[in-house]
Amino acid sequence: MRICVDRDRCTTLGVCEAAAPDVFEIDDEGTLVLKVTVVDEGNREAVEAAVDACPTEALRIEEC
Image 1 (cartoon, rainbow, N blue to C red):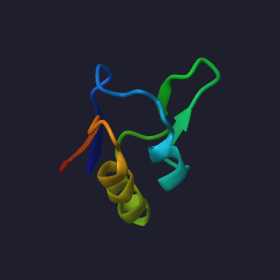
Image 2: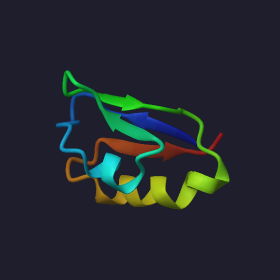
Image 3: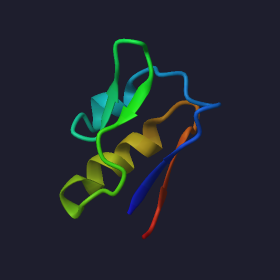
Image 4: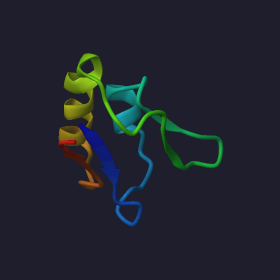
């Protein structure tokens, strides 16, 4: 699966980083950084939780 970010919607609140810190990071400039774009099965549950928790609905998952 692949993570897609709508940068216009993202407000970098960090909810995704809290849910899946191996995948998401808010950098020093306050920008969301994807540590990976293609997610393995080991991180799937955490990424799905991050997508569901995003208050601005800026994240989505696409199956590869």
